[in-house]
Image (cartoon, rainbow, N blue to C red; front, side):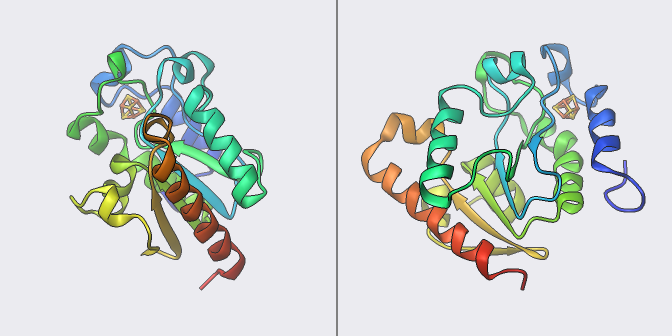
Length: 192
Ligand code: SF4
């Protein structure tokens, strides 16, 4: 699987739909590749599909997805057809456990190729897994959020996973909103 060359996003998706590169293939209902505008300026990267996403074949369709959709509209004025949404791992970890390092490593080429093909101006990473993978750091999201970072030709804006914000509410919600506003400004300013 090549990120560049003549590989298209559709070819990459077809490849992912039959993927058995890691143990997550065994428990999935379907591969959740990603959804949205193939040429979006804005891309969200979450952790992995949950039960509802595994059944629907689309990322962020449960309660977390509803919050994501709401914050997108309220803070950025975009809906999910105007951006692209993907996850670090494309198959559901059993019982919603965290994805294992070997599973993240196996799935990483798909995400990197998606980013290369979509070429967004801004990537919003949702939670620790996406943020630490793309920034290649072990630092936690609480320390990393509040700033933007270079990621190849894009700018990466780390924020919380909406599932965390649903639990934490209050201050975390306000910080996530501020991160979305930061990202919106960067979309308007880019490319760099
Ligand atoms: S999680 Fe990724 S690497 Fe593992 S089987 Fe699914 S698509 Fe393949």
